[in-house]
Structures are given as structure tokens and as C-alpha cells.
Image (cartoon, rainbow, N blue to C red; front, side):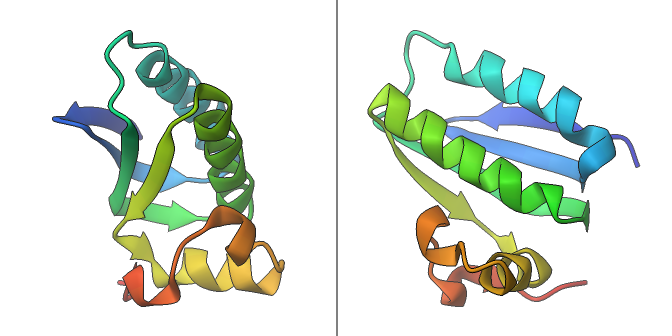
Length: 108
């Protein structure tokens, strides 16, 4: 499944794979999103339609957190896949990413 992202209201929806292969495109799309002049004070990234995850997804969540901080914005993740939460916990960075595990959605 190809990767895409869509802005719906104040939510950036990520669709498709969230892995090493898709990283260049995701980084480009999210940089365009972050460059908007009218960014809300709280950025939301919805991962409900993510189909494939590898360890690079954890690095991406950390990158997004750093970018939100740099921009002076709050950031929240919506519909986190459980396998992504588990990877972040395994690497010991779940608290750095700032997401409560109860937000995780079950893996499909």
C-alpha cells in the first residue's frame, strides 16, 4: 500500500507504511505540514491508517516531538498502533515521545 498523509482540520493523518522505505516521503510531507503559517497550537498526528511499522517509526515520533518543541507547539498522537507503543517501550523512549499507553489501538 502506498504511503500518503492528509490534513483534516488540525489533524495530520498518516496512511500506509511507517517504515524505513517510506521515511523520506513522510519527512517531506510532514515538513510541508509544519511550514504552514497557520499551524494550530496543538498539532495532532493520527496513525489509525498506518499499515506497517518498523523501528524507524520510533525515530520518526521522536523527530516529530523535537520539531513540535522547536516550533513551540504541543503535539499529540492519535490512534497509536500497539506495536509502535511496544517498540517505543522496548527502546525506553516512550516517555520522551509523551504518549500514554492507554491511547494505543490494538494491532490489526
